[in-house]
Length: 126
Image 1 (tube, helix red, strand yellow):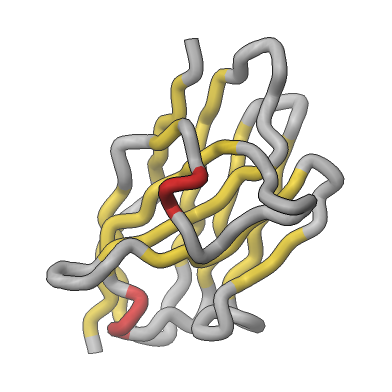
Image 2: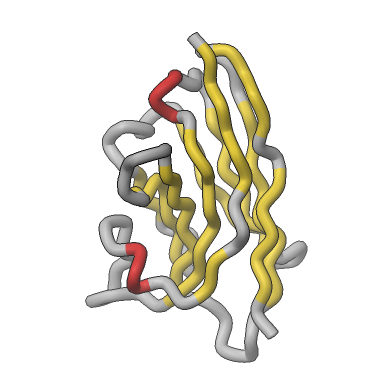
């Protein structure tokens, strides 16, 4: 049974850092893509960062240069290192796993992803 469990959220001041983790269990097929999404109150869920099974990564423009995504296959852990945090980074952060689309991991469409964690809250104060 596939499970994804996020941890590491919290409250920080602008300019601070947080590291999110997602512990996952796989089915026998594994995941082509693992992606971090976030959702702020009153806003749509948006893709933040994604990594494929070849460890290629992509980031939303809003977090480029500040966030890093990584995956430890031995420990079945997905991580999101978030530096230089801004108040607009506030939201519930979810890890998701699913297939690639056209050979790429999709940051724009959450519906593509089959498996989701329960989320971890990140709050950045100014």
